[in-house]
Image 1 (cartoon, rainbow, N blue to C red):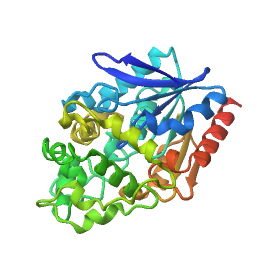
Image 2 (tube, rainbow, N blue to C red):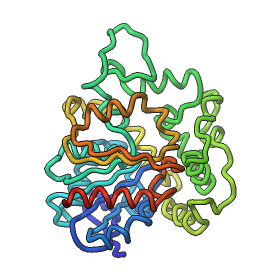
Image 3 (cartoon, rainbow, N blue to C red):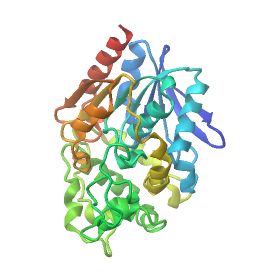
Image 4 (cartoon, rainbow, N blue to C red):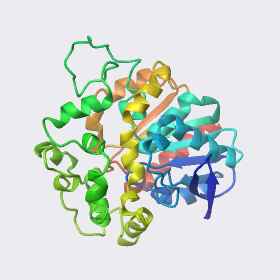
Length: 346
């Protein structure tokens, strides 16, 4: 694989690539790195594609600005377009996981001429995608109480997070405040990554935090200890690559990319308003882990997906996979991706 740094207008992103042909751009989430796509690089290259995986801004070998304004949905869109420009790709296949899926959905809506096909592992039309479901949810009366589990154009995401946090610990609320999470996690990176990887996997128990109060709690207080490595889908050497990728000379910046992705929720809510009624016409494969614990956040996701994504070609649930479907079950993931791309090629 070839590695290079790409100027995206004031910042640099680290990218790895393999193969020749049409570009397939892969975007990770939190926790993740370009390394998250290690199982996809060679199969895509063999199939005749130029596989490109990036460390998103704030991660790995990419720049790590501390200002949340550098991570808003419009800025992330510009960075991804700059990556496509760097590779001379007028159009590309885009694959996204976790926050990467949200960036991929936004790219398909805001620059559809640049996305030839889309593969996402997180549903379309939800708050953290920066759109707040403004075009598809009923409007609440101005004096209505905040309903944390529903979409509303009348309440900012952080307001709903705060309501949820009255009942129990909520990481979306905890991460909004600059400092506490940085200090808690700075010197415990391996422990944090192991716990979070495991709890988001098919074997995890992510929702334990619903039994813990917000007051006085940190994220490590609610994440159960992870079993010793290796796991069925992650070896010690692979895990060590993730730990090394999150290391930084300034410990407060180790997880800044992920933290700032949460801290842009309100800004993205406002930015996304102009695209709230946009459906996704791009040919789309929705490919997800059947045991992904994060789907509790997405009520009625399948009905909404079929309604808001006219370009939807197929929904594939991968048995035995959780949030990291491309790593937990790479053979099934790759087969579904390559079959879809073969259909797109005709």
